[in-house]
Image (cartoon, rainbow, N blue to C red; front, top):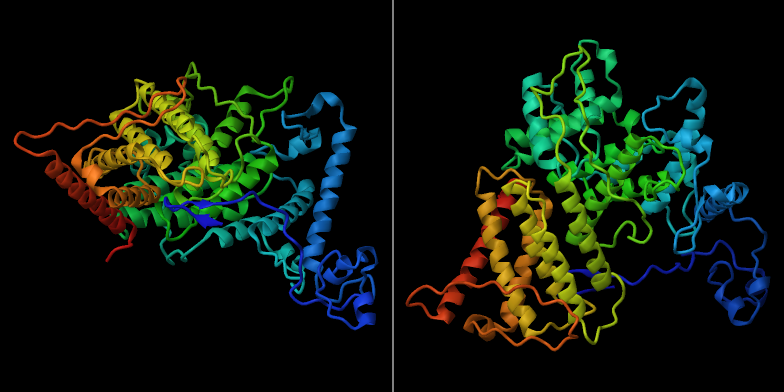
Length: 603
């Protein structure tokens, strides 16, 4: 593993690890008889493999010593048993319910019994509580293995002794929490009119980009929470309302510790009171709950780890099969199908955002998922409140989903070039610029075709994403370790534009589009690239000389447009670019200072 000049870790494809023990329980029979050292490697020690006796390599008995090697081996055996069971179920079903992707791997469609277990909002009954507990224990075992809680060391103790007392929710929160939340900060439910203001802020600025739930269903949860009948609201109603209030409050915070920040923490603490009843494997509402917590973690990086949360949500999504649309001919209500698609694409958007800014591998690949974008037909009538009155006049019930579709499109483009440039190997390309020009042109076309109805705030939000993506693609990578002067000039100009736009937006009180901790990381990475190209080719960049384009294939798309700046009267081009460079560095520094104040990284 290496780190390129952009700060990205270029990972080789995962390989099956060699199972070793740090200290063998006992030497194998052959090594003990020969009185030679045995390294205890599984399934055969090195000495037996070297002498062609791997099949004869056995310990004094066929059982592991008490408390030794059991955890890892038991996990592998448990996984093999489950895979065999799933394979038998797949073979037993009719061919019409087997979905064979293009890659050739077989994905079994859940049976009727399994499908009933995946219904999102069906409360457990006494008859199903024991089965649900068994499923939860199984999910915990799998999640423990994924999080790396099991030691590959063969001397690890068996973890099965404590999982029965460990809930799925407790495991998730333990693995994904950072600093402990302040004690005694649980906030009382605010008056309805105050909550409505926060909810509308969330819907106008966050929900339009990440519609992970149905808006009408959410308002039904709000009505239940504020109902005089306290038993009318279930735990998920409390969770979703509190998390929306928390995200809305945190997104309005300007400094760590201010009233908006503390209100957000208070609502999160109130939501966590229902974690045991909400965070369960095997239903869509549990995945939605994880996504809301992930979104909050992007606004409060001190208390929650967004990378771990989106990883847990991705795993839960895959277990439910949400990464594939149901096979053709499957009877499924239109509303449920749309909800599945919304949840998947919300995970997709957050996972790609997280991977790019943290320079990590995706939780799942594009080729492994086949889900159409959610359809977004506006309903013909607005729902009514429990009292029977139509509230469409007092609420903007249904937001436009065009901005969410625009965001999905740019994340799909980013996913493609990030995987190709940074995650698919380290072999250097001989002619990289046909691909780079095509990639940049695809993003330019996306930006030029943004929905005309989007607000100026969201349009500026997307422009920041475009400039950041240009810089990311053109910067050095494993595929293109040395960039040409023309690409350096483009990076120089786009970084200046990015810094100017970012500072203007965060200084504008009217700008309400979501800015998260990820934006601080983007500013830092963009600033690093600006200083890098300026250091490597100072004279060319400051002289204003535009280097010639490299020779590429005639069918290649044109390079990204070179920004043009008007030279002030009486000013030399060199002095003008020196002033622009100094201004850019100051703007980057100012942005980082403001973000540092907001998230408490500066005193």
